[in-house]
Image (cartoon, rainbow, N blue to C red; front, side):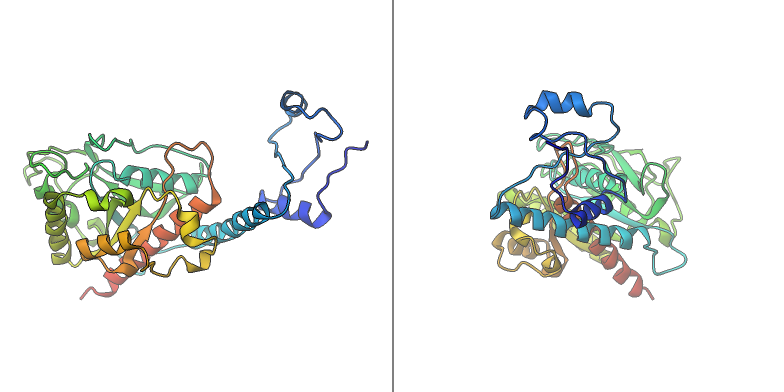
Length: 334
């Protein structure tokens, strides 16, 4: 039997375009060679990058393929938009987004997820902690690089120690105003019981608008919203008052949603519509006094080994919305 692909000409060209305008050559076909994974490995080893195609039946599998194809299209569109993004004001070269949330809520995981999408591979630069102990001990300002040898994009994600309900544990509340104003330097060693002071040698005494935080993203585990203690809720509300006093834009990011694909039902054109039917989302929005239209659900990369176009699309969409909220911040400046 001849080693001829089952793909039609148009299917093959579409696949080549999806993979980056490559040229494909058929190396192995189970109906011709042995239907064995070891035989396939022997045939395809050292043959440059390979793609395995599994033919599936009709029904739900077709819907899955349609969803992946649609997600890839939207992901690529968002990538183009974000790669060409520029802040709306000339005197600010990059947008700074601060992530605040309890220990283990997914702040560092979201940063890693954003960096992974633009790198084209999974990367875990920001150290991820558990729901008990905060691993992040420094205030970090992470640049986002477009590809391995690409340029740095005009937005940065700022990470800090996780919030804790107990005093003297987690991010010191007195540090937050200094972070918002842009006084805290990158890689500053945070101390839960002692805030930074103007006497620190790296303290930024006269920050400009470009040093400020332009958008605050509150990060919550969507599965633990109803488990937040009254002390933690009070701490969030205190922070929100501080954020609003600086006229800083804010959004609410709900992480660890394991059914994002079901929430959007594969229709990515509905991603910008508030999901008012979700009681958890409504509760979190009211608790923090963040409008429902600035509340987003996302599933971060955690233990995966490969990128997923559905997750990529959600992550990029949330990032784009954060930048748009920051744009509103600039528009409101005197």
